[in-house]
Length: 258
View (cartoon, rainbow, N blue to C red):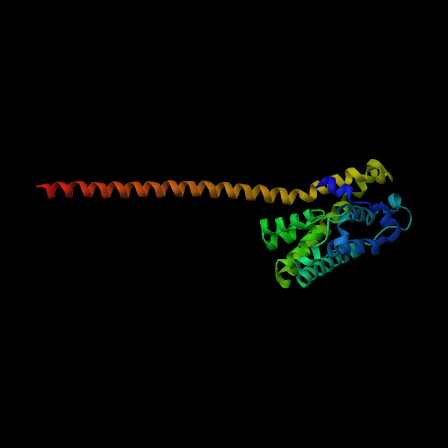
């Protein structure tokens, strides 16, 4: 997942912020969550650097006049992500699996859709919509998949809102709060460290999925243990009943003989 995220991020988020500013951030958030061709955009690293760009050290890192408005990011960012995801859900509900009936190419692979469907079936609609926000590629394809699989628009909207604010504002605030420490450590050479930054962000992003898998695995083991105990108990009851029946049968035959 990490190698896919790095390999499929051809846009430099620092250049994007420096060139297009706030509008660029909003546009990328909309495209990455609403358009199938947007899955390669650097959502996680973009949000992190946007948080840095909203901090007091923004001009020192990105250049004079590039500081972004934190409130606009915290409000407008999630709204754009919500709007993009709703568009993806609508397209999936409107066009169904025809959206995905295309040959594999450098920009599209069937496995992306299958991965999104796996998370949808694994965690159920609500959890999948929220958790998918933190998984590169999946957050693009799960939205139309939810529409294809018939998730109601109102239910999708509710969890879409929850996931968007957790993802967008969470990573923005991490970047904002760590900005001064980053500048103290590496100065304005953040572009040299963009891959380690992306790696760290992706690791942080997938932690909720890891914990969810861990909890699901533990629950499954508890369920298997309970099933074994129930099966053993049922077997014990069956043996007891069989012994009781056999015990009743023997005296009966003895009396018959007399």
